[in-house]
Length: 291
Ligand SMILES: C[S@@+](CC[C@H](N)C(=O)[O-])C[C@H]1O[C@@H](n2cnc3c(N)ncnc32)[C@H](O)[C@@H]1O
Image 1 (cartoon, rainbow, N blue to C red):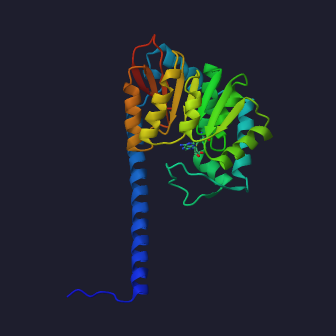
Image 2: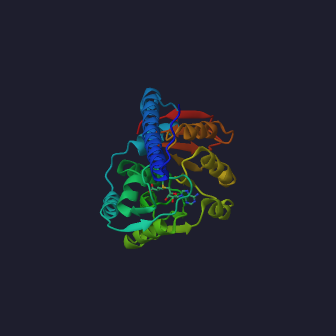
Image 3: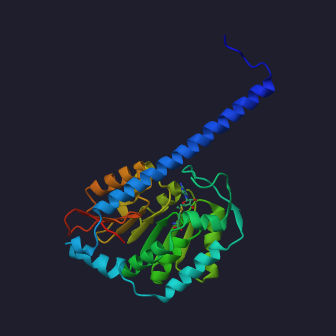
């Protein structure tokens, strides 16, 4: 015999409790799934990756030895560290606009700037690597998709003060924090556009960029959409960097599609980044490199 609960208050309390338990289990399960996926991807990466010794392409060999593995200290690294400390110790709180990709770390829209810098910004090691990549290729025009509080933007801007950087951010309060950093540290070669990517990209899809850093919406469909939208801007010297190519199975699928695109020739997987070249003089070849 089935018994029913007649008290409506008790009934709604049980429904609420049930929903909380389901949400909690889903959250824990998804996080474990995500962590397991990334560990598995990382082991695969370690298995296939090489250092300079297995690389026969002179172009990639030079990039790896002279740029990736260049340990020379640079004065600008101090400024990058100061900017990072400034953001990490900020007490400011802002309301962020979410663009649908959501956040696996934050639960509501009120966030501490320090927490955004720690979670969304690139690591100190990758900040220096990005700096070296820009210093190595000396691009004159850079596009960054996804400014956040500007950690990657300043890494690129300080590497070559002659480079003009256009950086795109949809959240006005986050963009204001980045803008304040650029002003506070007197970095003048950056222009920030605050709008939804689909709108701002329309504005820039007929320009030429020597380097594009894709670090906005880390989802398969969005990544491929930005890739296709910006293809008309490429030259044989373009360098494109995609962040978080092993973030999810969707991002790994996007990375495979990008690698197989007929216009793409050389690619380098550094686990964190997928670096893409369109060098017409070079045969198609994919490298997996430890940095
Ligand atoms: C991962 S963060 C960028 C991190 C930054 N490049 C760094 O390393 O410091 C991605 C940023 O893209 C913005 N964003 C995501 N989707 C967007 C969209 N569709 N339109 C505009 N901005 C978006 C988010 O607000 C977020 O600040």
